[in-house]
Amino acid sequence: MSCDITAGRLEPCKDSISGIRNIYIFNYADLPDSAFTFDATDTDVIDVLGSSLTAYKYELKATTNTLEQTITSSRDNGTTFFEQALNISLKKITKEANKELKLLCYGRPKILVETNNGDLLLCGQEHGLDVTGGSFANTGGALGDFSGYTLTLSASEKTPANFCIPATGTTIADKLTNLGITTIVTS
Image 1 (cartoon, helix red, strand yellow):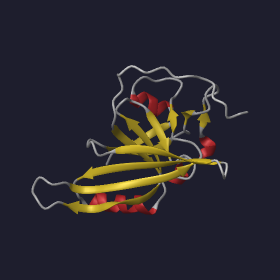
Image 2: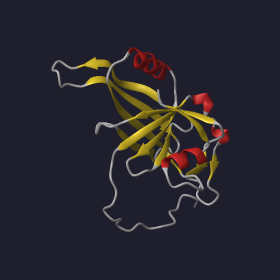
Image 3: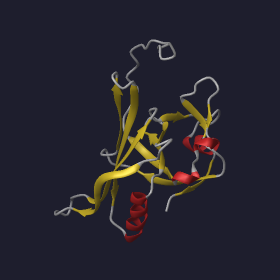
Image 4: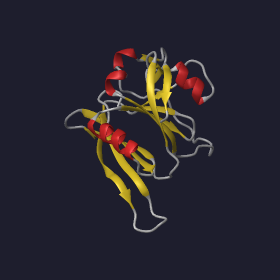
């Protein structure tokens, strides 16, 4: 049977941390599935996203930024799919952010998530992500309250977010370049 497992798993060392460092947003049409190259021996790993790609980098420094992937499986229907939920908090309200985040709400981007462990995970690989919740341009009541944007982006995919691991590169900058990202827009 093709769905039989092929390996066990030992208890790992306690050397992992949580959190998201950055996200890299791609407009849906700019990152077609047909441009992906999957690792020859591990088809759960993408080693090239494309060529001459442009990504829009968003730095995330709050502990409220999370990625959660839940499994929905039905024995009766013979189906399994993965719900991806990316929650991001973006500090400070600006007219420029209002414009870009409004466009993000209208689109269905694909997002490369950079974890604090240095992993790169592609969310919304096939169908893209939709902004499904959050709050827009909030300001708290007290001087020290949060002022900014909170967004929940969701996707329903056949597979969990793929790891993106290029054949070469040790730094995040090298990995992004070797995945095919030649332009990173930060502002």
